[in-house]
Image 1 (cartoon, rainbow, N blue to C red):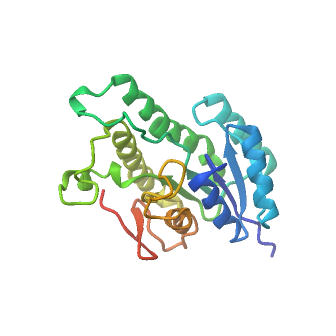
Image 2: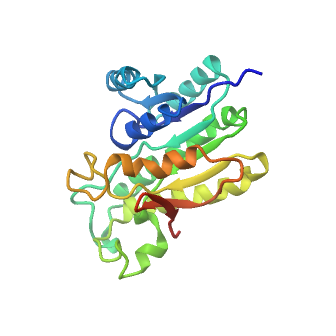
Image 3: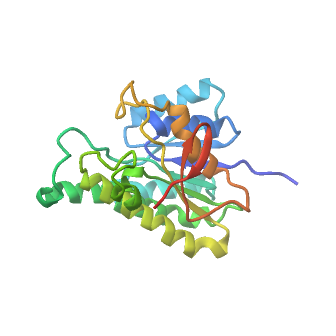
Length: 250
């Protein structure tokens, strides 16, 4: 009996964590679709991974545009007819100046983060879900953050407790976490697993060279969740500590 190759789509995969997640999944003999809105960067990333022995294909996908999402889903449907793994990685990250009192938060900034880091993830998932339903082991991984954990944010002695308030980013990731648990409950009877992954502060363009975790470490929870066995968890939030994947509080 022929065993068909697993296919994974990683959004925002042309650099940073998305690239590393694609690389690690590809090393597991999974075909990786490099989702990126920049065609030049996306194609270059696919070629770079192919040179490393990874079966990689560029897929033009701008998660902020519904037409782009629909077209990308159509391309995958026509070329493959199924999708095993979806990693919702593309997002906008906080930057200097986003900190500030929640009582003074700019409503437009809040809306921008929610549109990109929450609503767009929902739209991408909904568009590709029919293809994931064609998989024998569908897995959806939402890239989140401990900053989006209400439990962690409310504990003053926790690692993120004293950090400056970044309500737009935190709220978008908290909303994404709610999508994770809600969708996991809906899809549990179908065997599709949905989880959130927290990479921690990694040595990417956003985290900087002095961040505590390498991109290899930061990618580990997402890769583990993408390859879960049938008896693996769903509706959970995971991070990494000392080379181990562990539960994060909601």
